[in-house]
Amino acid sequence: MKKERVTLTLLKTLGSCRRRFHKTPNVAATHRHQTTMEEQQLHSDRYSFNPTLKWNPEVHNYFAKAYGVERFSRISIALTRPSRYSCIRVNTMRSTTDAVVEKLRAILKESSSGSGDVSENGANGNLALVESEDGDSNPLRGDCIGAGAVSKCQIPGMEYVVFVWGSGPRHINYGYAPDLPPPKEVIVSRKCAEAVLRGAQAYVPGVMACSAHVEKGDTVAVSVAVEQKGVDGGWGIGMTRGTVLQGSQADPYYFERNGLYIGQGTAMMSRAGLFRVPEGVGVEMKNRVYELHSFHNVLEGEIFLQNLPSIVAAHALDPQKGERILDMCAAPGGKTTAIAILMKDEGEIIATDRSHNKVLDIQKRANEMGLSCIKTFKLDALKSVSRGNHTNASIGPSSCDANNGMANKVSDSSNVQGEGILSIIEDRLKTEVMEENGNGEKANGKVYLSKADIRKSMRRARNGPGRNQSLGGRVDGSKGFSPNSFDRVLLDAPCSALGLRPRLFAGEETVESLRNHGKYQRRMFDQAVQLARPGGVIVYSTCTINPGENEALVRYALDKYKYLSLAPQHPRLGGPGLVGSCEFPNGYLEEWLRPGEENLVQRFDPSSPLDTIGFFIAKFVVGSKDG
Ligand SMILES: C[S@@+](CC[C@H](N)C(=O)[O-])C[C@H]1O[C@@H](n2cnc3c(N)ncnc32)[C@H](O)[C@@H]1O
Image: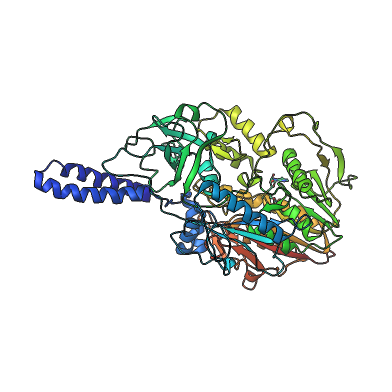
């Protein structure tokens, strides 16, 4: 609605501007001046980054009730922006934090001297990029100033975590002037834009449209096509890949892209090349709205790029040397490896995931990091408790030939969450096709899919690209584990992922799909409860802001299993949970926490000064199961 109003105002203003040109010369001169100023204002609004997150209206109402209108509005804005720092966990089994800090500083210095857009900050020996427009009052910063600076985390026990500070949002001059031809442009898909905002380049599969006559080396303004509501009520991108942009209002998504410019870059190939070659960098970003360093393939095995709340979740589990720990939905292994390092690689971590290829990904991570206490299995978390005689973990390899040689980029699980519910996947896939570009990032493509495509994509989303397209490697299957056989269980559940940042569209989730995520998570939690021994611990976490998958799960757990109780967590960086309940128009009552429970969970609010993703952690202690 808001965008439509903006569009109308823009049209009206431009329309009235045009009419003014036809008046007498003197009046026209005055008005031309005004027009130019108005147009400049309109264009500086246009060539900016100020996205509005679209929600399903019922979901919007539900969240607005849960958080209050203002807080939800702040959260919605924060979700569209990336965190202004990269959080790096050091593999202390392989390196020291100081050594990593030195190496990162050297890498940043080298990359900045290559690009020429970073200057030395003599005061602390760090690097200072262009300052961001708004202040950054992140308490994690301490006295570490300047974008490009590297600092060690000051939280006791988390000194092995390193932050690399970025900046944004920055104002970018796209070279618009009323009397000049419009800047050359490239439109990228939403997923591509989200990756670019996190520091990636714009890869070819993500490029959707481009101005005519773009040649290699041209400077282009990069904007994003975000899903719009179609006439059938569904969301989609009504644009064919390869569309030619004229720089006029007749361009597809011209008005919809107001305030959706993510930076300026250099075309790495001509327009024809951009739509002909299958992979590679299409636009090398030179001037970004958010300046964040990409640590892709940097210091492999020594560091792991991980969101701060995920590291906190591993700490909340409080794993001890020699214990037996289950990580139920473990791929790609971020928390598994964090737990292993906290245990100094002594003990046993069983890391399971439903997808064969994702299990390979955990193995790859563990091998890279030199961790030997991690055992991986392909297992559906809904069948984690063994039935009958199958009490041991492994039923032997569900493997693929290590040399079958089919190269495959293992998918980034953070992009595909909550894929357990087929109806949800089907809904999503109707509006979205995942393409993988050369960097393993995913991009939205066109909208129309046959039923066979949908079925194939559903299988892919559920299970990864499939064994025949695997990198190769052995994956053991499992029939599940004996009840009470683990000291601690982590259930980092597949979820709606509505806390991940940056996110430029949120309209795909409905109240019903959100509720389905909750049902799925409860079934998984039922398994976790059986597997944790009396006296043991269960940590439940999600990367969503949806109370139905967070506080409502806690309520379910505490009401159903009287021997569970919430336990305090260390460290405690997140805010309190939501107390109360929400009644839906159909009479369904969703109950959250009761007074006194709110400070026993951690809720990471993306709009808080910590500037993290939206995340939730609950820690349960298992009491005696007798009686
Ligand atoms: C939030 S991600 C886990 C991230 C991981 N804990 C980490 O920190 O790297 C959720 C994972 O659950 C897996 N998953 C979804 N449904 C599952 C099921 N029924 N059984 C086992 N794993 C499942 C997905 O494959 C995905 O890898």
